[in-house]
Length: 302
Image (cartoon, rainbow, N blue to C red):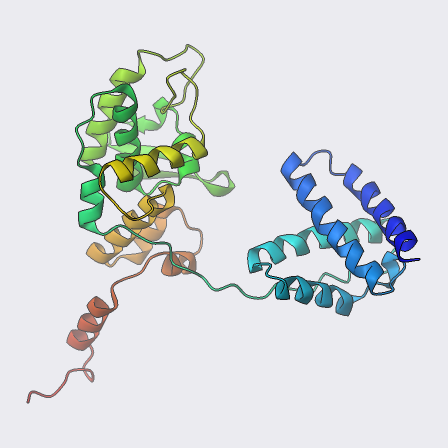
C-alpha cells in the first residue's frame, strides 16, 4: 500500500517538474530530490494523497531533515521547492491551501568569513610575476582586494569596465545591480600590465578582462583554484579563497575608517545589517574607543 500511494504522490511531482522547463538543470534536479524525499516521508506517515498534508506534517518533515543533519540553508531551499509544488497543486484545485506557506527553516548561525590580516595580504601580493598566467593572476588578486569584488563580479568584468580617467571600475553585482568602485594604485598598475599581455591572445569577439591562455573568459572555479595554489606558493598556510579577499578588503577598510555606510556602498550591500555581520572590528579596538569616548565608562585613576 505504501509503495502504491508513494507512486501516486510521485506521479503528481513528475507533472509539476514538467512545468519547470524554463529553470536551470541544477534547479530541476534539486526540486526533484527535495520532493522525492517529501513523498517518502508523506507515504511512510500514512498520508495517501497530497491533499492530506497539513502544516504540521510539513513542520515534522523539516524537523526530521534537521535532525538528520540538514543545514539551515539546505532546509530553506527545500522549503522553497515544497512551497512551489503546493502552489502548483492549489492552482489546479487539488489542495485548498499551501501548508508550507508559514513554515520557516531553523535560523542559521551567521559565521564571519575569515580575513587575512594586513601582513598576510601584503605577503600574498608580494610577487614579481613574469609569465602570462602569473601577471594575470596578480592583477586579479590586486583588483579583488583593492575593490572588494565578488569572484562572480571579477570574472564578469569586461575590458571597458575600467575607467582610467577617474580610477574606477563598473561592477554588476547581485540582482544585476550596478555600482562604481574605486581602484587603488597598486591594482591599476597590475591590471595595466596584464592588459598588455592580454592582447597577445585575445580573440576579436571576447570582451572579458580576464581570460585564459585560450582567450576565453575565466570561470569562478578556475579563479578559486588559481588563488589557492598562489597562496601556497607565497607561503600562506591558511586556506585562501576569493571571498576571503573581499572580506579582507571590507575588514581593513572598516578598521581604518570606521565608516560603515561607505563600506556598505563599496560592497554593494542593499541592507546595512548585512555589512554589520559581514565585517567586524577587533573587540579590543572597540573597547578602547568605548573607554575613551563614553562619559561613564572611564575608570577612575588609581
